[in-house]
Image 1 (cartoon, rainbow, N blue to C red):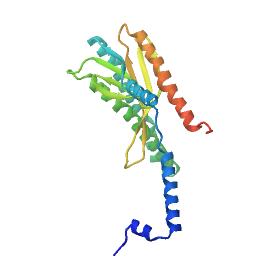
Image 2: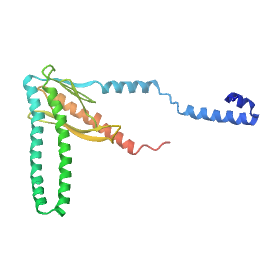
Image 3: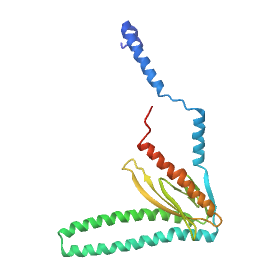
Image 4: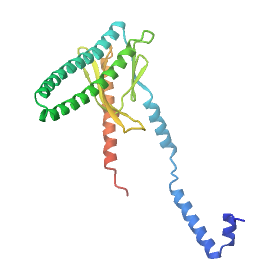
Length: 242
């Protein structure tokens, strides 16, 4: 018959029981140190910041003419640039194939590097065009309102969400007034390593909202970009404990 832990402890000597009780008391003392009580004021601040993160900073409604201009500004230049760059890649590719036909020694290695760089560049351009194509497709939906909503966490174009992860810069240009967002997104996959993809988004500012757009740019710079930079500084060089 096997004895339980209590039976073993009862049958042990007095000295053994004392050492066991002392070790158990030290363990409970260490565990209690990790139980941090958060003040109610801190909990309230955390809840308030969480609510602010999900509040809209602007709601912009567009006329049909502005909505069409918005799509031309954001979609057509990206599509045109993609095809011009792709066309430009065909020239060195054809030149490399011609050299390979003449000499198959040193040129073969050079051509392999050219192929690799072209492949990487095409993948990069395809990622940019795919993200822009999603926004273009969202703006073409006839059953969705001509509306853009922007918050700290991202933007909604015609009801379709696009996050503003790791925002690096935001600015506004004029004639017409357009917001430019630039950053990168992390694509996490448990099966493979994490990858990053950059994004660039243009948002037309509707008429009579120019001042609101200027305040929005400043808010993104101070509350998002600069705040993220300060957080990274503290992460790289945390304050020395007392």
